[in-house]
Structure formats: C-alpha cells, structure tokens
Length: 415
Figure 1: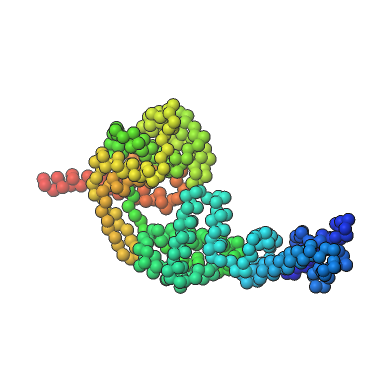
Figure 2: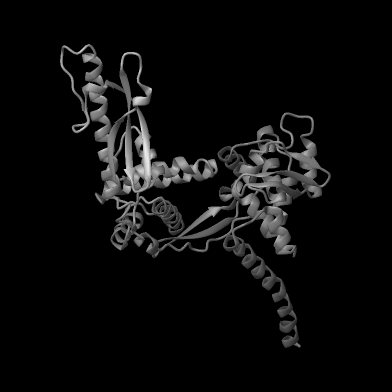
C-alpha cells in the first residue's frame, strides 16, 4: 500500500490555484479523495509532498491551513495502513473508506468498540428486545473486565478467559446456568461477526461451551385458565390485564406481537398480523370461540382488538389477578449455578408472567392431542429444541393418564 498527493491540473482556477487530491494505491486498487487544498504549480514540492510557503506569498495564510490539512491526511492514512498491518487484515477498498470517513482511526480494534459497532449494525435486522439483550451482555462483560482486571481483546477469548469468566459468573455474580449460556451464545455470535468482518483471526472462541439446563415449564392448567377467564374483576385495569393475558393463553402468541399489533386484521376465525420476532409476514392466528369473545368485548373501544399493556405492568397485574382467584399453591423451581443446585418455593400466582401465556397455550394444546405441526403453525414456533420441552410434558401427562389402568391391576390382585 502507498499513497501520495496529486495536483488536478485540469481544474486550475482563474488565480492559477490547482486543487489537490489524495491517492491511495494497493495493487490494482486506486482510491481518490478530493481535498480542500489548492496550490500554485510553482509552489508545490512533489518530492516532499508539501506546499512551499513564505510570508511574502499572497496565499501565505491559505497555504498554512492547506499544509496542516496535508499533514493531517498523512497522519490519518498512516494510521489506516497500521490498522491493516497490526490486525493482519487483507486490504479492501470498503474497509479503507470506512476508516477514512470515521472521526478517529484506531490502530487496534478495541473489544468494546467492535461490540458497539455490532450492536449498531444489528439494529438494522434485530428486534428491540434483542438489542436490549446485547446491551445487557456488553455491560456484564464490562463489569467482568473491571472486577477481574482481565483485558478483553478480540483475540484472547480462549480457555484461559473461560476459566476466569466462569469463576466470576458462578462465584462472584451467582449467575444461573441458563443465563450464563445466553451470555456465551451472544458473545460467540459477536466474535463470529467480528471474525467474518476481518477484525481478528482467532477461532479459539468457538470452543467456549455452555449448556442450558432443562427447567420447569410454568403454565396454567386448562381449569386454572378458565377460572381466570370467567372471573370478573372489580378493578378495571385488572380486568383488562386478565383479558390480554387470556388472549395470549388462548392463541399462543408472544406478548411483543400482541402488544405491537399494527394493521391488524380480524376476519372470521382469524387474526392476521406480522410477527415481530421471526419477521413472518401475514401470520394467521386461528381464533377460538373464547378468543373471539375477548376481541368482541373491545370492539368500538380505544382498546380494540385487545388492551395493550407493557410486559412489566402486565406481569404485576396478572399476578394480582391469579392471587385473587386463589392460585396460591406452592410450586418448587430448581435452578443451577455451576454445579450448585438451588431449590426455591413460590406461590404459583407469583411466577405467572406474560411469558407463561404462550406456554399455557402450547402445553394445553398438546394435552388435548392437537398435532404438533398445527401448534407450531399457530404459535409460529421456529426453535425445535424449545418446543420439545412442551412435548416432554405432554408425554408425562399421557403417562399419568395411562397409569390409571394400574388401578384395575390393583383391584384384580385384591380378588
């Protein structure tokens, strides 16, 4: 790679001043950058690449500024060349232009500078919720670096990092295994993006391992759902929260999709809209009679087709609703932090959230022997691994039902 400054003699003005431009060459690549500098032909020293200036020159003050611009351009290009060399990157015109147009050229690509760029680029294709998660992971890694004094670089995410990171997560932060797995998944996705972009050449990060634990699926039984559905709450905001939750539980949709319903179409037995998370256009949701009654309830109101309540407020309200209808039996949840097991007991009403609406629909649909492919189509489920959890619950339910045959065996032994 090399560069030099060139006079554009074809653009000479009436005062005899010739515009200049920067030329960057690499192989067959020739990149031109016009500059806000001009010089008389006789004042240009091509060997030194500078404008010869003296106080008696009529363009003295202009030349002072122009030489500063030339020096600044030289410094910028030298930094860009060092950037390619330091990071062992192949020359590309696109990357050179990107660095040239930037306000500050850094020789080495910082870990968090790259992460910021990853988040910025991801905003073009990812949902707001995903971008928020990326930001949370970045903040987690900043706290890790500050606490452990382990300097994060794009090329040092290896087994040594993994050992220190696991110790920090499990012993200092008490991070549960499933959240740890999500952090590692996001970190690996980021590093893979940076690798493909040519920001580093290390593939050691691919060996990072994190397995999610299989956890309990929290849902309302069909009987509990109908108890909630049929209850009339005196508090209007609780009644609206109940209705939004019940629509989630009767259609299997995500809270974000019901909350962000735009250009929604209700026609006959179907609700049609675009799915935010999977970017599915014209997703059709079959409306059961119970779901249609909820939508009809808000026809000709500002809430049509269903009240829109934020996830946090819905969680708070639906837990109060479930408490009022008596869903207070104790439920034990088991979680792991590394190899440590934690068993915690909660009232069921305290663990019902907007997420359990979708889980309620899928689980009860499988209990009712509705074919998996139909449930997947209704809920727009793309993740096979997550869906298998519901199938496993359904199989356990069927086993419990079939175990009733054992009563006959017991009675036969008595005879």
